[in-house]
Image 1 (cartoon, helix red, strand yellow):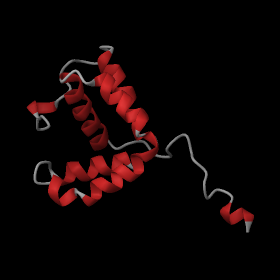
Image 2 (cartoon, one colour; image 1 turned 30 degrees about the horizontal axis):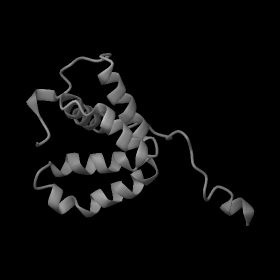
Image 3 (tube, one colour; image 1 turned 60 degrees about the horizontal axis):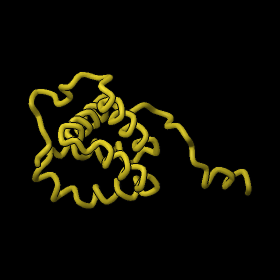
Image 4 (cartoon, one colour; image 1 turned 180 degrees about the vertical axis):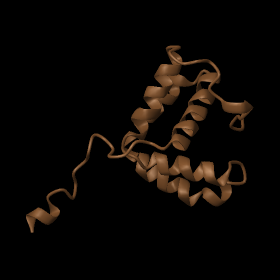
Length: 118
């Protein structure tokens, strides 16, 4: 019996699969908008605060999908919510924000002029 439930509450530090290119593109767009508005420190602090709740937040995004897809593309919104279900999603977003803030990547993160709404 112990063999069956031994890993029931195990938390893996790493994800078995890498994020998809579409998910990474959405993260880049989101981080680009955050950097553009000079909210990087606040966003990183917020993400660190809600880290334990990232999966619940992603599930809430699924609940709000019918409303949010009036603003965002349904495919992009779904990809972002699936990405946020990952245990390492907060780490990936924070690393990307810190890289953008330190100037390691180019200034033009938003592809083809696409912006998230104000």
